[in-house]
Image 1 (cartoon, rainbow, N blue to C red):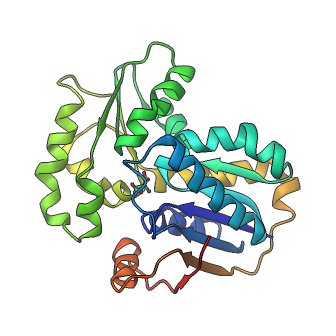
Image 2: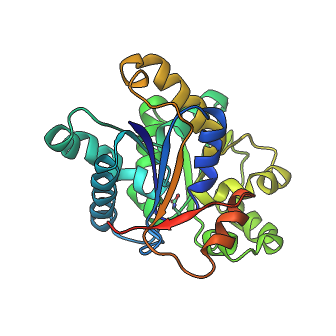
Length: 264
Ligand code: DGL
């Protein structure tokens, strides 16, 4: 059996690469729902429906464990699937999101001041970061801002225009210094160096924290780890394969990724 990695599109490849580099021995299948990307401005009901379809697909393709690399899908859909869908349909399978690892890392590095979150509109609206941060640190002041220009900017190769846009979004988080800043979206991993040039606040980027947490999870769960195949196989499935997708995948990862078309 293998590890599944799901994202709304290709942005999750940035996180997938960091996981595969850290734990290269396992077999992986990546699924990007490129036909319906972006999820970031959709309703929670639609995101939940699409996420369940993706999980059905990945479980039918020999996944014991699925990592939801998409922050927007992790925000609410992970919790719902863990509470209802998994116990009812796949009691022996496991789903992990990227929200908790980022929340835990932020709480570890943050001083007593406010914690900032940049994410998609749906992630911000879900209130999931606020809820999870306050569970671990009651009364923490969480400053969130939706940063809708960043995903299309990264996808269109517009990194050279990103600095003033990012600086404006960071300004939206308030005038006082933040004690940590969470980059709550797949694509923002590609902007982390620039964010670190703009602000001295400690930055939490999912590609840097998720592999550690997954490794810890597998150590804590040898009964899962034992079952994973170790052939180092990688398969990359997408629900739409447009003319620019291979280039985009390469731009996001710095590697050539053999994308294959599939349907859910
Ligand atoms: N993958 C999404 C996320 O991490 C960004 C792209 C989208 O809006 O679908 O939130």
